[in-house]
Amino acid sequence: MTISDEPAPLNAGPHIPARPAFEDEALSGPTEVQGAEPPGGVEGAAPLVRGRVGAAGAKEATADTPTPNPHRIEGLLLGLAAGDAAGWPAARHRAARMPDWTRRLTRELDTFAEQNATTTLPVPIALNQPPEPLRLGPSDDAEWAAFTAEALLRAGDDTALPDLSRDRRIRAAIDLTWTALAAEVAAAAHRAPEIESAVLPLRARISVRAGLGNLATGLRPPATGHDNPHYFDDAACVRACVLAITHPGNPQLAADLAEFDARYTQDGDGVHGARAMAAALSLALTGADVHTCADAALTELPESTEIGRNARHALALARTTPTAFALIPLLEHQIVDHVYSYGIAAAETVPVALALATAAHGDISAAVPAAACLSRVADSAPALTGALTGALTGGAALPASWRDTCRTLSGCALPRLTGTDLVELAELLEATQPPLPGG
Image (cartoon, rainbow, N blue to C red; front, top):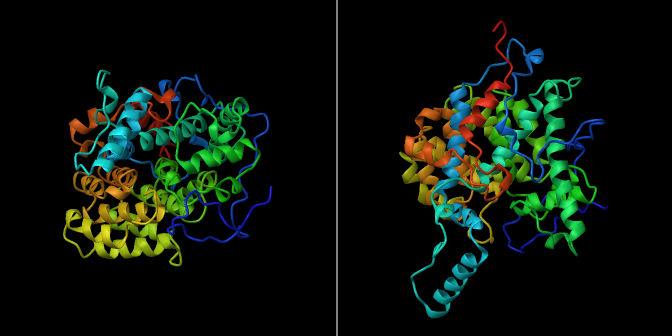
């Protein structure tokens, strides 16, 4: 298949930035690991978080490898989940667990409001159904973060691929996780007249669906992310927050791993954003202050890119604004795009997250509500903001009410993760960290 220099845009909105064809230094993509069994990340498999894994990677521990505070890992996951829940799109994602007719009725009521010029707008409804899916809680971002965490847990098991170094095990586990999911896409496509109409046991971003479809047809990264209508979105940025756990205190290695994963679904600013979030989270997990984390993120954002320009401008605004609340109108008018049909561009959400975390001085209770106020980017900007500020402050900084509400996944995007406990997941991720030298 010929790789075109131009993406095939899903929507002709002018926001989509142009990008170059592959450069010489672009990642060539992972190679298949011979003899490795695919992970259990397929339909019907129990979430890997249910089990325990032993501490792994001790052989690769070095004297300059810091270990993240376990409460910061918990803070990262719970902060991401709380931000995910705080954004208004979470209710619509969670409504996917309701019968189809409830969502159809909501659409009909919206049409009625439009046609009759009424200002009473509909919201997701339960009517005579149990309303539990519509209650406050995490949705797609938290579940795809857990999807990434499962790959890390597989790599942390010394009995899996024992002949590989820890870093190569992680990359192999990421590859196997994606290829196993792509196999589900291929099986579903085989049963459907065309891949676009395939019924899958998951809900995902356009970039992820396209990337999985590309994998199913035999493409490999970076082509799977390059030949992708939403190469620029921030799906990989959410995953990058979790991948940072593998390289605490080393933003360069964290960014490199995030790019390896991002290439399955993204290109251009989508990859840059993933590198930036991984770099920032890598330092946050070891106790760096929010300004140091933001500076590390900027290092990964070329000044010539849209995301690089936006991030520098957003942080300049944040550093001259007294509070996160005061920053909201400035970001809304100067950073957030109002032309394109989706508010998920990494060039907007990553700068917003970095700026609000900075303006809030790392305080999750100030940063996440502010991010949720930016309705155009509320699908993921609050989650990215929550991940960074949660790692900065630790799990204890999250109010108990939010902790209890957001620790359990509902399975609205990845049904096999239904009931997964993020606090337990954080403990399992901590168990995979290399011990301190002499520890």
